[in-house]
Image (cartoon, rainbow, N blue to C red; front, side, top):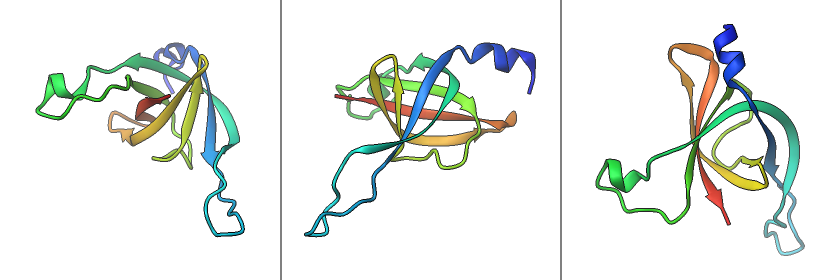
Length: 108
């Protein structure tokens, strides 16, 4: 990793995975389990509707760049500065496969 990339990771995020427990009726019990923490770069995204013909979302969207980590995928939740960010998509950066770029939507 280059020093430039490591220097850009200034925010601490907590990674949480959805619980897979089931209740007596087979429904999901809800909640999330701690899956570690990571350094990341977090920046706001322009609402999709302003960049294309998509419908506007009322929830703020964020781009989170971090070192590649297995298990971070849609359904994962990040906690950053008291905000809950639902991972909507993620991909490896073509310029540096050791880093991943996530698009997250704030949960309320």
